[in-house]
Length: 247
Ligand SMILES: [Ca+2]
Ligand SMILES: [Ca+2]
Image 1 (cartoon, rainbow, N blue to C red):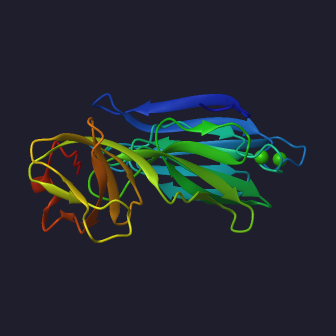
Image 2: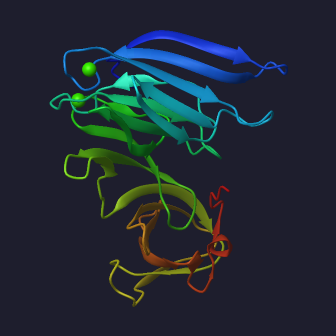
């Protein structure tokens, strides 16, 4: 979900012998630095080799140039307004990424300079002018999973940064392959209960550092710790069936 601020002027694609897009030029227009004058923006995409996708992009505004590298870029660019109260608009350049790691490059233009302010993960980004980009981030602990997250513009650092969340929602359905001992709180190392092998359960919350919370449909549950992909002395894949692991 974008709020379109700029104007799309033109899109020109060059098609190679194999029928795939070799290069693409997108022309946009908007008052990016809010000085009262429209800034014509040219975003050009190139495919560096015969078989790969569009991996290079170049943004030009007058004499200012930014050259970036992406992975499987869409060949699209738009102008958005992340914070409607400040004196800037942003250029957004989306990519599919190496393996469903969708992301969007955001750039700013001011005083004759274009710079990257952030690479925000996700394909369904929400920008409403409040200074935030709402999206879906990939968790790090245990397996492949995603959680709702927010990137916020930092005036001090001039970049978009992810807002920290102490505990993140997880929603991973698993079947236990072994008995799992659980703690009642993510501080205690002494287990107070356990869930039996064969039980279907949901891992629903984590600090994304060490602790995960799990519960069964019968209301049993608690916390277990994860260290380097290991749970209770075994590889996590030997503890949980159906653990989603990509890459
Ligand atoms: Ca301007
Ligand atoms: Ca703005």
